[in-house]
Image (cartoon, rainbow, N blue to C red; front, side, top):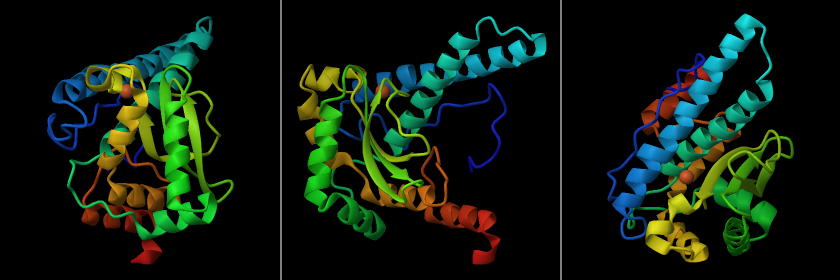
Length: 232
Ligand SMILES: [Fe+2]
């Protein structure tokens, strides 16, 4: 389980939870291979590098490059987290993907209807300025969901929000398959969403937790019990 302290520089690239060609024809295997093995890995490496350099800065008391490394922490750390979530909330076409009870309930309560939520999410993702993400967040401060855009990986967030459904709209996510037709990608991508995983993430988020990988139901139950032993 990932609910443990990760020492500086010890982040690892989580494996894809399916094969490179599992999301075809919506996303081709070349897109997934480059996106996961090159782009996501570079964020993990960049995050580790920033953390190690900040360990050295603390040891030497040398903060001349603090602005640079703090920016690297935010950019690469957010990139690593969002990509990890992105892989988990997709599944091959045809897999069962009924929207979870709690997810549907929270969506209806705040957005008015599932269709309104879908329209806003797709429009928000489509209209991200430059590179970024469409994000559905659990906002524990408001005790409800919210849709946000992320500029690059780390800008335009609402502090304390916990992403549970994310759509990568950097060109590297779709260009080989959709060229500049971002909205076509998002609308096709919609059919890949694994709503059972979104539901699991919502339940985690409501407890303040953000897993980086998928777990079997058994592992989920064990982790919940280890954090809430009174649940038995
Ligand atoms: Fe990406």
